[in-house]
Length: 231
Image 1 (tube, rainbow, N blue to C red):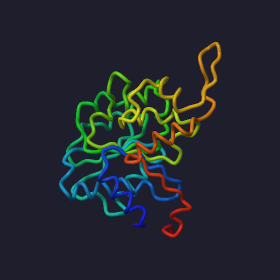
Image 2: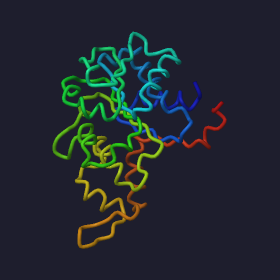
Image 3: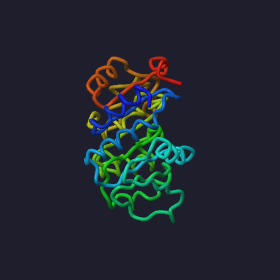
Image 4: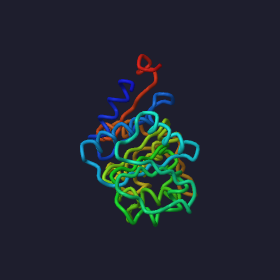
């Protein structure tokens, strides 16, 4: 393990909700695996665990667990199609794509989970999208994330266009207790027109203030900062 992976793995074990914003190539996938293994060994997780990611990354999670020793007493089950699904058992790490999560959300919501890991969380940037509602719910109705003791998210670009794209995660984390419109009007620059408004940038002072308050749930790792760790 590289030092920054150990450090972030330890930080995740102390976090109920956390977003790891890390550049490509720093080994983000392993950080939640390290944290889950430590929590399991400490007897702090006795429920199933879920991992959602892009379809292309699903098998990589299983390989990383196997390569680095796995999660003791736990098995990894990859769900590739709806027919593969059976109720999660205590001790299982269930891995599936974002779209499969959306499809299976009613079944997944019948249980409670020790951890939910969301890889490439920027895929859930649109609060009106079905997959976002399935995971994060709406302002008045909770989604699948509310069924987990811990929620950890990974991304290289959590808000690729404007800060409003972080609203679903920040609302779930308790740092955006307002409507989406109120949130973006405060944290983004907007241009009004006869159809409503268009987001044209970010309101940096408001963002800095919010992220200062939310520093406990956010870690930024730049590749340039960990070059000495990388092989």
